[in-house]
Length: 595
Image: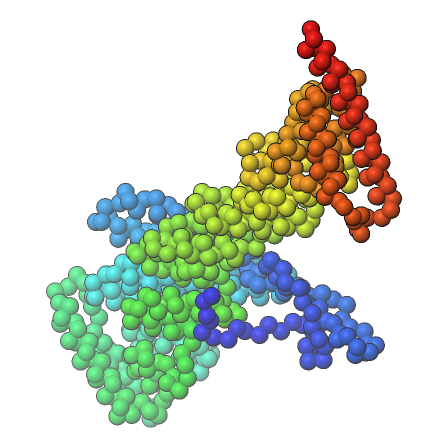
């Protein structure tokens, strides 16, 4: 079992006082039923909470909007796998970029739909939930787009800078709207969004707009004018790569390093120490933006790992985020697919947590080149088989992939469930599919016990159509043949029925405990006007009866006197009927011989 690097989050359930009350719970296939209880012998007369709380994990996966997101992204993935063999190596990269953009467009469409629903709903809690999902998908799309730029498009260094600037502008598109709000206010330089707008302009490489905004602040602070002038000079000198110009990448790199060193010198000299906002703008390294005294936020860690070209760390950090209460499977469903070029699939236990759509997970595992089958086998064992329909779906998946051990395990589990629910026909069907001879024998015994108690068979359609499956065990063979005897008797094919009945005992297929029932079934045939059993067959029946009685030297303690009397009467009737039949058979056979 995979270990989690962080402690799981504590879920607080409103209305439950776990400090004052003992809690009881019942595990379900996808949730927990939680209720207040009292320890035995406490004698407390206080009334407890009458409510039962349903604690459900990953409730977001049941949202129709997110289900649509799963299905559409799954469709894109399957299409990619089907077309990858037909694509030449030269056209693979453009195809991967196109597929990645398709993924992101699906995410954005889902975000827009969630935003619309969040605005239109009147339920405050539901609106908050939708807004939370939107913020998560925004982070998903942010990381995905960055990985698309760095790992999939993988543009040359110069062009890569322009792509990264586009990435920043795309995911901070509200800066112009904020700038208009600031500029149209009574005092723009004192507006609470003023510095946010300036920093966003700098991060997007829009130095001209940032300088214009800073000029307004400089005019309001004459004493700090030299400080603003120094920063303005640095911003003006920031090199910008022009892919269509004559400047080489090496020249740009030298200019950038020189500019970067100049910025660091001003920071070390404390040129902007009296103004924290100007100092923040001068910080050009991402590491400097992070507070060294505290750990970076999870999203920051993922972005930093991506900038360091560590895709494995990106996926690992995204998986660890699953333990965070604000991160849902929706996010992880996409994180693990970031590295499309490696044609990998989501790690174990991510998309398959969406048990409502197991086929999605199976398709991902099918295309995992190395560990997909192993992950699928492990995950199949963890799928709750709460309905027979779901079990059949999982069983079909296993049979199509020749997962023999999982097939047997599923069939055994369902057979035991059916036995507990006294559904013997279903239990026998599952045990036959599992090819479990021992369990088939056990269920066959239950069928025979049920017949002895009721006088009729249940699930006749199944027993009548066992076919070659009855050879799985001797007891199952007996069950099928004994049912065949009843059919022959019902069709008045007495001679065939008598021969089959006798063979069940002489071949020792029938259990010894069932011999008395078989001999009792022979009584109507022995009492027929026409002789059914021959003299030799009658002798064999007599031998079976005496063998059965010789094994009962003492009365059974489990049976009462009335049951003993009934069996004694049966034995006497059998002996009388056998004697009469033997006499009639000898006379008949002697007459035939004399003729």
